Length: 409
Ligand SMILES: Cc1cc2nc3c(=O)[nH]c(=O)nc-3n(C[C@H](O)[C@H](O)[C@H](O)COP(=O)(O)OP(=O)(O)OC[C@H]3O[C@@H](n4cnc5c(N)ncnc54)[C@H](O)[C@@H]3O)c2cc1C
Image 1 (cartoon, rainbow, N blue to C red):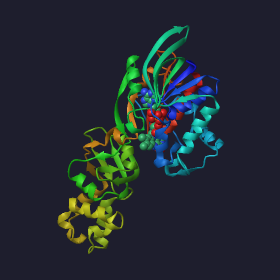
Image 2: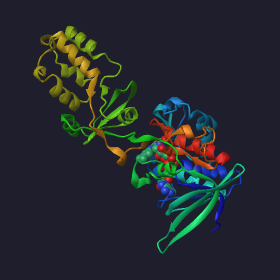
Image 3: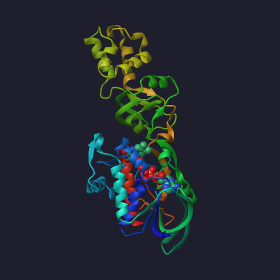
Image 4: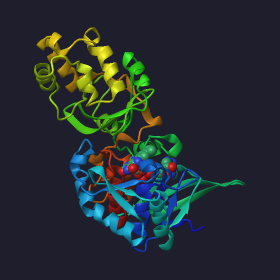
């Protein structure tokens, strides 16, 4: 095997493959080293197997980072339209779902195959089952650095330790979420070796767990979902929420988990767009002989109404509205529009779609993804402190940051 390359990319995930094919279009020799036995495992699992590969409207506001401006340059350089053009060139069928999210119609394999095909046609070498042991910056000639990468190439029959050389090293090893899909802290360790600062990390786009009576309630309602407006730390999302045997999940919960910190409350409006106090007080006047449950059953799943009743107005469950005081109705209405809950924890990296935090963008050039202090060393994708909302934004960041690095590395 040739031992010297213009570029070595660590990680054959979304960002790494995009960087590799972009650099190869510039006639660079590119080697991609992947730790696991398969490229792009997260791409394959994404979007329930249909990959929500981008979003038609991508703004900096859809991302979290210590520096909210950092992502702007790359997102402008490589837009959703650019990725869609590649998808169309490969004849991949896709559809727009709610919130401008684009999904494959057949399978997320289409996206992975597209990236691999592009890489193969352009002569990119991709090796699986490679453990990288050591990365050393060798010397700088003028502005050019050289990196030496010591990797172990594993196969069923043997393991070969090989020393490789490159002018540019692109770190695309992703983040900690879902270790079985390649989640790894390698990129953070490498950053530390090069004295690059890290922003604290935590699991995100992740379900919540509860330890109190809410856990039992969620267990009883497992599988039930309802549209809610959910708030935490000044951010809110109008999406559906799902009860699970561990707690709460669904798009609303995953979205708000980006903004939730341990110990914080979440506030759930179970009747978005409806003032529950006003509704019940009006019905008290117009239909005084009816119960609260009758009216809520028209708006919420019956099983949920029963649970809410047991928790919030058990004494009044068979009372007619006429018999319930205005104050009590106001209290119940307020509860329905603002149910305050305190999650005990998230489900953690085992099920999280992403990792918040990562390599501090202060030390990265936002146009190129190159580290400011080490020419030729790039970080792209989720390993950086850039995290998107649910809805195709995390892939768009992987494509855009990969492209930006591939264009100059
Ligand atoms: C279940 C699930 C569903 C998701 N669905 C969506 C979705 O529909 N839309 C969306 O936008 N986002 C989705 N995401 C998030 C998205 O997958 C990630 O944000 C994106 O894959 C990050 O790209 P990346 O290239 O930075 O990292 P990854 O895609 O994780 O790639 C990193 C690669 O590096 C490899 N690696 C790790 N350590 C090493 C090492 N030491 N040496 C060599 N290789 C290494 C890993 O095996 C992996 O192949 C989903 C995530 C999960 C977990």
